[in-house]
Image (cartoon, rainbow, N blue to C red; front, side, top):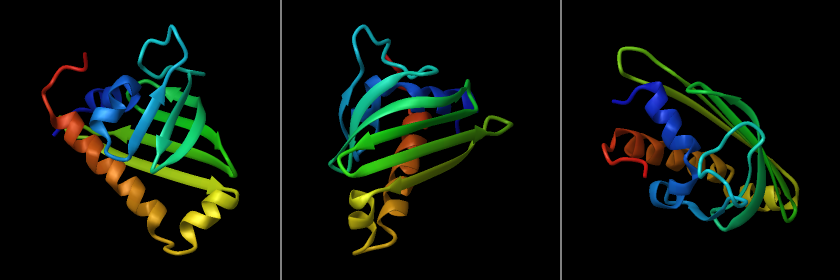
Length: 135
């Protein structure tokens, strides 16, 4: 179990994404970036071998986070809502992708995108419940 602020802090700490999320690689934050997402943050990452340049478009501390991303032949939107009480959190996560790369991902298996999002949420749960400091 983890509180919404703890879950949210793991989600916005992009400097730890490569350690906390199995499908994330190549995270880059423009210098002198703080290592944590904030309103209007710009960052880059690879999600399941798709390189994305993203920008935070919604940021409500401990509650909501969303970003839009662009890659080769793909536009994406990721949204997260974190809520809860009594030391427990509920996480709603959404992903939408448009473009030729998005179509190529879902044509062979329509559940591919949902499976990737499910892995990300499962990894977030593990990271949030792990007592290791964020540093």
